Length: 311
Figure 1 (cartoon, rainbow, N blue to C red):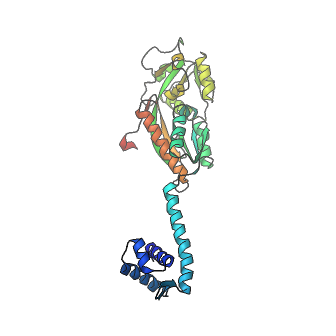
Figure 2: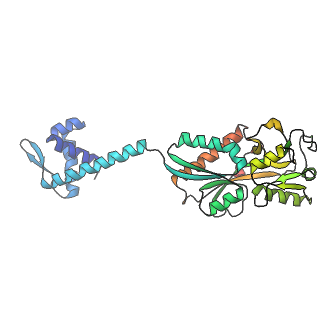
Figure 3: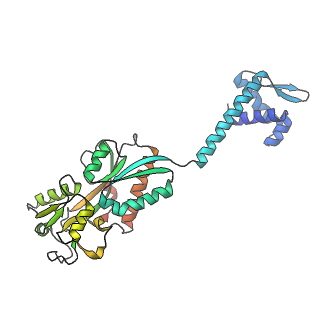
């Protein structure tokens, strides 16, 4: 049974005439009659009764006519919905504070522009906390800095961030060079996030690698407070360039850490494709697209995209 046959049948009933229905439909009468005969053959029942004045439905034809009208209405509604529908739903996205400073607003704007009916929930927290929330299915996707415990999820390398030693402008002990070795930085009064933080794990491993005990004078987990302390001259910190995104760069001095392994990998981690809603799948694509665009435009300090063979 074809939709065309249903439409032909309804027009014949409406006009009570094969000839008039054929004229409206733009087909020859023989073609229309042939399609109705095929429909009757498939249903194994007579739908129309020919009379001297035209055609009229049989009892079976009248019952079929009611249901055919309903079926075609549903088909038309489905086509209209497909043509005009916009993706809706909700999605929860987690980012570390330094990441939101660069990516957060740009991502939200892109989602609003592309998927205005998707309700977005943004969660700003430490990478370790975001990993736990992902495990607990409290968020749908996140940008994480550690690769531990993500095997069960969908994880894609997003970008890498070069790390900088950052101080207040004019801080006396700050290296006045274009780059600095970790061994030299370790002697400075350091203000770092605490153990559970993804960046701290990376730094601890780096200091252990060069077999140097760093001079840590304070541990602060909130990026805003940490940068306040650095800006107030209480010490220096090691952070990606994104940490200065919400700050007046003229008030700080940032020097790249020259050790080649001093980079922070960013992974886009989400629930599996089977678990992600359509809104979640769309948000994941938009998030990756916006992040890579910012890097390509040079708007993400110290960030580089993975090489094609690494992605």
